Length: 288
Image (cartoon, rainbow, N blue to C red):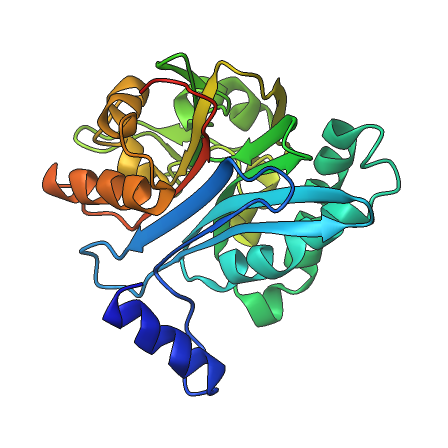
């Protein structure tokens, strides 16, 4: 542990700091070979850091869940903060989570979005994208997302994207069918109603009639060919392909060091956005 990390930990323990750490790591108690690490860096924009993340293992009844998520806020960070505090709780409250996690996660996404809209007076009119990954007993990974934060898994050294980038240009017909439009101003990215660069998001009450909060949900079994998982906000993926990210960290065993390496590389490639990154390693031989 570095001196900076030790000082932050002492401040939190003493109640002198309410801020979340910008780097950290941990490991599974059930499967000692599974480790995770995260790293965040603020972008060069004038507004405060708008990303939040979750990266932890949690014992639930007789099972262990790895809970990993990145919430990339826009027009403020209150919605992303709300997601960090409530989304996983809502998912685990669903009675059929253990029998049908995909359906339970979809329903919890909608419930959470409705909560955010109902609390818009307190949370503001901003919104957030999300990518979540739940690792069940080290064996099954369930990934869900809305927006453009991304989940990429490495299997035998090859990158495989598990999430879907919800871009306005690819969902133009749906947006228009709800009464909205997609702008295509030269020099800018496509935007819903000329404002938002993603087609799906939590919150964004003023745009909600034209936005979707329907997540894409995919499951992946964790086998001996699975090397690691990367979750990252679009500040990383704007400047790096999936395979480039995988190749960059495939020889870094420490998950936190891997996450830090990715964020630093994105900054060196002139990414100006906030960058949040989580790496989950499944050290079963893999690509070393």
